[in-house]
Amino acid sequence: MTSIITNTSPIIALSMINKFSLLCNLFDDVYVLKAVFNELTSSFNEDDFGKKETLEAVHSEKVILYSVKADDWVQQMYAKLHYGELETIIGGKELDIDFVLIDERGARSMAKSLFLTPLGTLGLLRLAKSQGKIDKVKPYIDTLVKNGFRIGKQLYEQVLKQENKWS
Figure 1 (tube, rainbow, N blue to C red):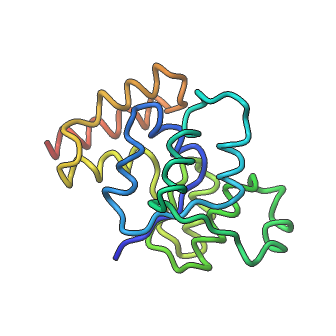
Figure 2 (figure 1 turned 30 degrees about the vertical axis):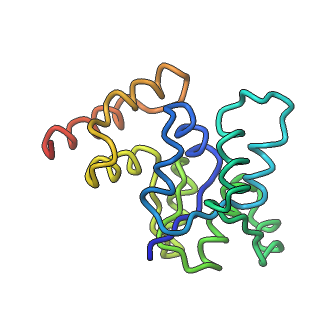
């Protein structure tokens, strides 16, 4: 069984491209931290990306809410990363998770230093393509960029170059 724990930005990105379902289609267990859940669902705007999908997934028990036990560690590390990123990493350690879904470079680096396997939104799209869940990666990346999701030009070109090699 493969498991993943996710931060906020990948959920927002998957919502932007209408592919939140990839989380449940690619992984047996999907965890969302309570801090991430609160960040996604606390606004009054029903149209915020990720809000509806997260609420439905938790309600239908497709996604498991998790609270970190080492909250003191989160408090100590807060200056280095945001709560959602820290809780995702610490939750990943506590659960002995297969993947932590985080887009931010610093958080991915910290996850690696703690012997976790980070995966970003673009990596998730590539995984989905390799497993036949989507046909192409580029249209989704272009939609993300169009919607203001920050993807550096170098990363954009690198992913597309890798995809063309593997297509």
